[in-house]
Image (cartoon, rainbow, N blue to C red; front, side, top):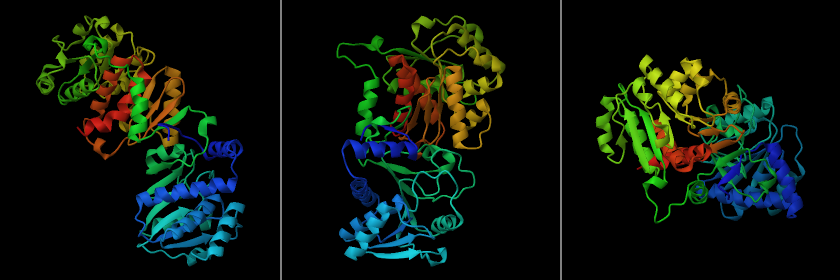
Length: 475
């Protein structure tokens, strides 16, 4: 699978599905069969084949996927039972065909459910959610919502196929019920709502061979598949020639570091050096300089840490500027920030206290060079742009601000998202629990500064930084 996977709605995926059926050509039934085989293999990669499976199917094509998977699992010797929830609905053509095949082979017990009271759960079973999948634009009906609630409260390990049933593709979820699966096996592409922090969707993309090239690539998911993604990431960096030297890979200046966070700028400097930047220089308050001893490859600009010193900055000596980690929010810190932006004309990276100062000082917004990068964590995002009620609203505001202000905005979270001035969105898949600690943001901005020093392309620098951060944090 490609390292850049479109993030799409169910409607967009149906368009790609139709293009696949026409273009290969392949029948709709055979495409579903291909999907079922690949989904089953992905399922057995995350669950033991010795686990009994309870596949809960709805009347549509998601239910058809589940019925086909039941047949394949049974053919491999797995223990399977199916609850076919109809609630007065009739089966889709594909679902009916797969039910008939199961009945023909008589290898799986199918219980047709017309009342939620007839559902039975066992915590020894892995429950496979095939009620609806993606594409819903309204809340589940009463009996379907009750089924979802029962499943959520069953205590069973739940795997959703395509999308957790009841989860909207992109609109705010509100109080609408959806399946809280431990893992979602997403067909071909993730949905936008998978990345909304409040939904907490843990997903894995399963490539079933749908031709997604027809989809717009303004929103893409950076796959956590290290081999594929690393090849793409390396294409963003200049090739390192054997007979090159440090002057070929940029000079980054990092500004910050004062009480009560004297080590912040040292963490940024360590990351900047590790990114491969040719030279890294730090300008910081005296209390931060001892922390730089741990990283002797970082140099120090030995000027007094005042706004007056910022006036003497020679912009031409540096290719990249990061301001903020441990900077402080005093009036002098604000003057340092303002003076640096006065003398600096290239895109700049703002993080931590620089973002806090920006949120309190509207005049600073007008001083930001076009193409600059802001890296707010959730609290900083709220201070910059106001409270948002949902991930959908947050992402729409970030996209609007990036376009209107001509900035790159990286909304940091377990799945960080980069919004670019020209309307693209990059959803990062490499985040993990290693980043849930202080200093991760300082390291991220240091990586971005180092990569920008090398590439002079802020979009590339931000993509490289957010995808490489977990790997750097593990060192």
